[in-house]
Amino acid sequence: MKIAVNTRLLIKNKLEGIGWVAYESLKRITKDHPEHDFYFIFDRKFDESFIFSKNVHPIVISPQARHPVLYYIWFEYSLPRALKEIGADMFLSPDAYLSLTSDIPSLAVFHDLNFEHYPEDLPVTERFYYRRYFPKYARKADRIVTVSEFSKRDIINQYNIPESKIDVVYNGANEKFKPVSKKIKDDIKKKFTSGSEYFLFVGALHPRKNLARLFKAFDHFRKNSESSVKLLVIGNKKWWTKDIKNAYESMFFKEEVVFGGRLSATELHQVIASALALTYISYFEGFGIPIVEAFFCDTPVITSNVTSMPEVAGDAAMLVDPFSVGSISDALTKIALNEQLRKVLIEKGRERRMLFNWDKTAEGLWNSMEKILSEIKKTNI
Image (cartoon, rainbow, N blue to C red; front, side, top):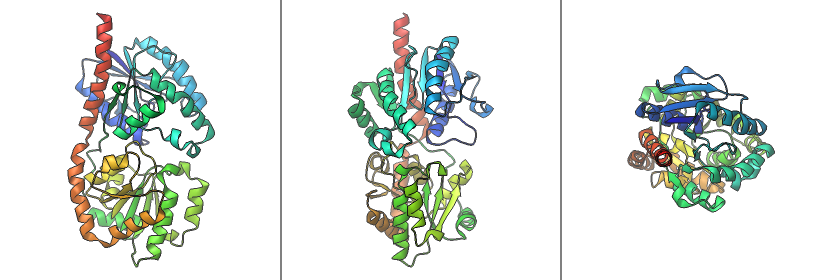
């Protein structure tokens, strides 16, 4: 079979959440299924490291789809032509975008519907595109994969999609994520926080990541304790909004906040493994990969008690109300002052992490793909 794949998020040194999921899944699926040909469709020059095996055939089509108008052109005009030229039997889209003008059987991976719940967090054009087209993509797809039971229920409720059409496949964590030596921890602290312990935020500095309340909670924690713990923020400032800026500028302890920018995969792993705790307190997530990465690094986790995060974290994290600065601040205080609590969370994280790995993710995604391929075979008999 010829399987076409939307790989526009596979960008060298710029892999983020969905890009990593695509990378880890496709790397395994293409190698495990040499009986099929995979056509990776990029929107820019690709890196050879993404051509995982001999049965992967790269194609570049224009334009670079990085704006709603360009999304539309790429998916509704350029992509259908490419699928026709390939003679594709099936189309897989790891970021859920589909072509409404193509009749190729398709599988869409929906990570979350945050734009339906918090549209104000997105620029107007992005918001319009997502809310107009993603319901159509959900109905168009022959099958949907999503990353949590929470997201499955959300898709069913928001778009009235039959439950039988949706498969839940959990994400994993890169094999590089594991505990590090004391020397590495000391070196990382020396580099980023002048040797101090630190709470860690990882992610795009997007409103739903709740950075504004984290700043306020951290300030409250430092004002009411004698702790010297700092806050290390790792991520791209693309979504640095007025609210986030104002929260930061209003901090009494803003000098204790360190911005580390974007890191390589190796350094990100070391930074997570060296943290006193991960503070992942978004108010909306479809999954939350950093939670699992922290579990693999033996790093305690503070996360939110809403959407998918309790499902992913189980009893292995401190759950907080992401809308309450007091709740977040209390968790920071408990983690900073209670070594026994940190040890308990680390041990529970070791148990919890057994549920999540990329081999299981790739197998689950392939099983969903096979359901479509089986229907195609029946039709062709």
